[in-house]
Image: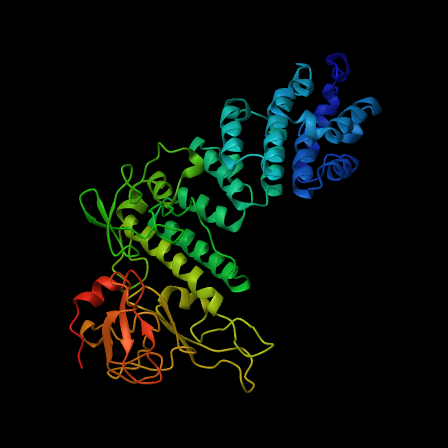
Length: 469
């Protein structure tokens, strides 16, 4: 067990001042390369080790320490799995003669380490950060050095987001001025926007970064809590798409019906700044920014008519939900290719203008995908891929959905054409001999007999339609 008398080897006042001067001159220099190496070997996590080492750097600089002091801190890093346990932190922070901000910085380093090991959620880090905020706000340069280093080392952007939102609510300008992850930076700029123009610029920066991420990866984009989450049951989307409708009721396009507003239901359409800072969304950020962005927010895109913040969150949430569904399809189907399809309008323009866009493979050789049309189906909210849906509505160039047989947005023509063979008409009926089997459309052409329209979102429409023959 580490004794307080061993910890009493304090840094002299002159050495402490030199440490602060060096922090200003070189704010990201590791506290001790040797300490980082030891921590990396112990933790097996470069980011966590870097955060811990940088936090220790906030208290002193290696060349200003005596050999015994350096050995003591090196031992602390080596035994971090034990020492950084919250109930044993007193072993390192019991000595009042150490740097006055050493204790809270070590606790924050502990939270970073625990969070990155997966032992707890970001909420634990946030609670520790909030708990010690009063101590950290008036801290000297070394405090900001430590927090800056930990923020940069915390590669998962949600942890950076939590740090930034706490700083935004407290008005900690020194911390907010640090460089952040692009998504976090856009959120900070939105929360500090003093005009509608500044708010628009922050949102454009947010969209540009999402476009960059979407282009290089097919992993689902999860922007919670920046965009409100969808918590409705039996809904397989990440972000809320609820739109203002009636008192205490939102309209959910995914459910195709009403959804109760928060706090009594899952739909969040208004700001609630009483929420913990780490749960702030674009709604709270716009509310925090003040009257100009709230009262004079112009159309998000010319011609869309979307002005209210509630409609903005619905648009952004729906945009990301559709993007998550469509991105796996944006690959060339030619054998051995697999490149991301592009559009003449540019990828960012596609994200704003989808539901109908033409895509091409960057390779122009024979067999590569050309003129691929991806369309959002109005009937079942699915995606119509022209590479699979070969037949078009007879009244337009709209490809017929393989899932629900919907063509152009005209209920009377659903089922006129079989999306599998191009013939018709189709017959409305059960998909099996059982009385309660799903209701669907059956192709009447011998040799096809395919069934579609089994999606639960389309059954109510199909059951009430009179299909044209």
